Image (tube, rainbow, N blue to C red):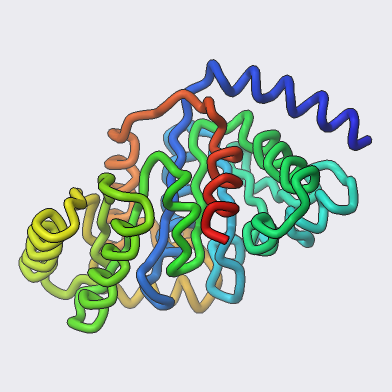
Length: 281
């Protein structure tokens, strides 16, 4: 079985080399930023635009995107790969175009696995990514490797003073970790659009001046009580309350993602992620 998977993975890498895909890592500077809820909503909004999406839940826990979608696989990708099973056993299909894979344990262990097992893990993720038009990683707060590997980074920030300070500190870590790159920022739980715009402008100016890190405002999510209701019910906002202001704002963020360039997937995202995880160890 392992040999067959290896042959299949080699074929997939050849296929991926000619395919363009958007790879996104969505994170918050600290727990509670709401990035997993946004990840779930973005994934559904993209499937509504006829994109095939693979959501890699590297966050885990009760507030993860997989839980929000009620699509949490029974097994982590690490368990599946080490047991010699097919990668699909770590994956749940939700609707026609969205697949969700559990990978928190896989990403935590990848840097310490022997080379052969680490390569099998990367090949398994490449296999799952093959049909996708977009791969979205629900990254654990504070984890840099998924951000280094993805073509695009989406950073969710709150609009209170403590959240702003924490966000800037995280941007400093990003700059030190992998140098200048564009970061898309979403301001969450916005009470005043004008204030949120001011927060972003201040962040962008400071990051450009002191970190050489260009920021792009991808959107604002208003403070909406239905967002908390959706989270408490473990349901995506855009399904439970599709007409709510926060749902409309989430769909606008997805539209902004569609404007981001897609890149050829060679070297495959899975390989870049493995390299980033091992470099950070």
